[in-house]
Length: 449
Image 1 (spheres, one colour):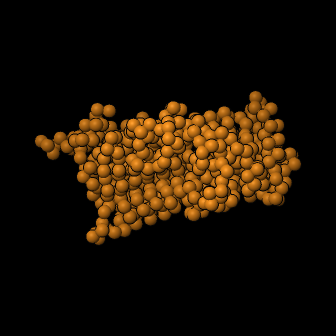
Image 2 (tube, one colour):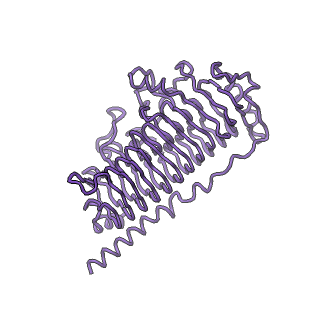
Image 3 (cartoon, rainbow, N blue to C red):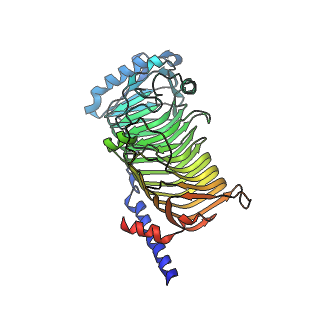
């Protein structure tokens, strides 16, 4: 009878976890579409731009976008960037616009800080990421836009980030580093068919956005680049990232939703996200991370069909006391890991605070995490799960996982390390820690929720 009860409990728990896929982010990528043609098109050449890699073209891009605003109510327009090397500082986009980079077209980011406007920090962060105070505006910006597309025939946007990385490492930044592409409070955004190189910090950042579709992009930075991140859905919903290759110094894909008291107050979660068909490398970070800035909440995320390689960790859940918020209803499946330090990381004591104004009693919730159908080769540590005593991580379900360990069978074999976590498992090799083998405690919590 006890054996039968455990079997039934496990089946029910897996069924409850399966609802993540059916009711969560399962169809968001089906909403993506190919960029529609615009009835009007102009070339950046018509605004005096010179593609020699030396002439500054910021004014040409700004004037072109200003001109194309007049077509917003006429079906929109396309700004065409032909082959060449187009040096520019920051510029803004407008609604109903397609920015199209032809093959062999390269937009080069200026390395002169005076070409980057300083702007206020995001309200859900309260300060810049690197430093208190302001931040440099991103290279390509969209604010409160509708129906905007950044695409091409595999053209390139190069942030020339070495300048910024050196300043970060030497502690000589005046403001927090810029990103390559950032959309704020926008909806119906498409980024596709482009190569992004050498982002100063984030490559593509969508914050307070809805319906963001990122398809067939390549994003690369040096493995030594400090805290560079590929794609960052941040307090955004209905996001699809698919068929892309991302190689970063820190995290390849990182989901966020605000920092401590600022994120709690702003209260804009990241929700309904699907990530599929991606190849990821994160030299000193995680192939896919949740947090650590997650105070607005992260939920209903599906990750499937991903290849993760040469990363410090594969899937990471990061938070700490004072964050508040939640990470819940996460489904990760059909993953292949190769040369990954820690396959699964869940850390309840990760990250710093923006200032002293955080609430020490704002404990984050991490619950209903399902990891299944995963294989790994040359893995150093299978899992590090460290919750907090005041708010343990609960309802973590592992199934059909097979990891080939670098130190398997050795006296130092310590494949799983767990504290303040509860969950269940089935068909997991190497066998997980006992905290992830207890059907009764995790099932009871799942049923109560």
